[in-house]
Length: 91
Image (cartoon, rainbow, N blue to C red; front, top):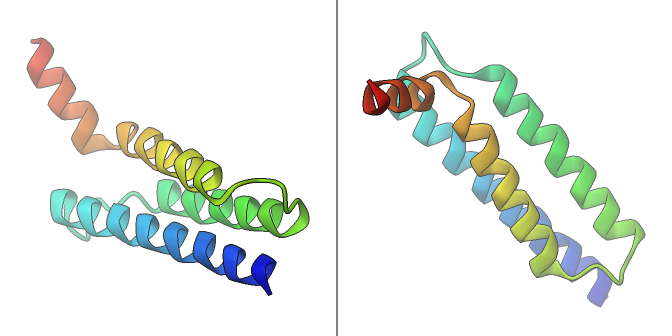
């Protein structure tokens, strides 16, 4: 029961972070320039982390949520609005 509850907590955190990424990118770029590839990478990465949590029960929930949060930030950094903002800051 604990294993299933912890896996569900990880899944909820991953879904929340993915939805937040999608909303932020939609607000920044609109529907025309939405980064579908990055969203797909987030979904696949989240599924991999959920299966790792289910398979290896010694992995802590906070470790997986933290790793996925960092992965989400990394994906957000390589989208067009962020790259354009960095270009404008540098120049």
